[in-house]
Length: 470
Image (cartoon, rainbow, N blue to C red; front, side):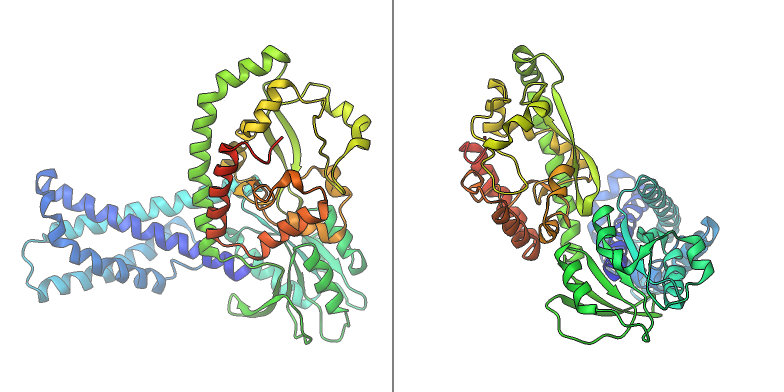
């Protein structure tokens, strides 16, 4: 997802730049004419319609949409000033040619000043936010590199120049008959040999495996692709390869230098991913507002029947095995986990999931909370934090994942969700875990934003009718 990651960042940068231009233009107009003159603002919108695409081209020309990680604040300011001076010449020429007298030149100067200040502040703020998130391990893709020779060194050098993309190398895997480069192995941990690759991918969060293997070293490419596809891991190869595979293929140049062949186990459109995250944030705020309103009543009911914590948290596995705390309203007695082993024989699910009818560990209040799905309202906090999505796959526990077959692990290659295809497909009637996984994989491989909206609408219907949950 190297190209997708770069495109996603560029799309967001362009959107923020266009918004800042609109704000700067409006602020300049108000500063010059005051609020009383704002009714004539529409008469000058034609200038803004020229400015916005023009500034996009100018920003692109001065390198504002390339990696800015190594660019200092003064360097960034220099790029902004250069783009704005060129833009000022274009706008001033248009005003002269159209003989527009109503748009003050002072307004143009104020616009340039406001735009430079706002753009600089915005880009520095985004830098700070991204840096803070990535220092906490959020919005980061974990890469495992196969190889430790010249090709791996070239890739790792390029990655080090693009830390703002959130691509983190978790380690190296060596291959037989390749002489590792000392600088490479000193800067990155060597986790093992290629024969341990699949075990390493299951032991730690790995989003992508990148093969940097010389032509003269033979590897069973098809076997690696098949096994890693089962795990839902994207595979990239910095080498020429043949064969026919079912995975979607993408050939591109990383940073215009390094040819990379990519095999996606699933492919999500980056623009739709932005829409998905916006939907998550809006839905999370709505859900948390409902949670805040119901909290006093739910808390009183829970503690009245079973004194103890109102909220229950449990370690769950998110995207590619990332561990997070999943929150719910407590619906069981405090000793529920200790009593689980004694009830395993009554498990109605075939496979790595535990569910029984009339679970004796569930309180009466908890039964109502589960039936109405109110117990899951605190998970909107997980959605807001980015650990979960509104729609996805059910987040499993580490103990459940430890019993997974290899192909089951593909269901954890995306963010888990509060609801999903399984939840709206009559989950109480599905007792085979393999069927649950098939529904999850169907969702992953056919995902688009409209599918999420469709599932959310079905979920609302299921919740209102009190069907499917227990």
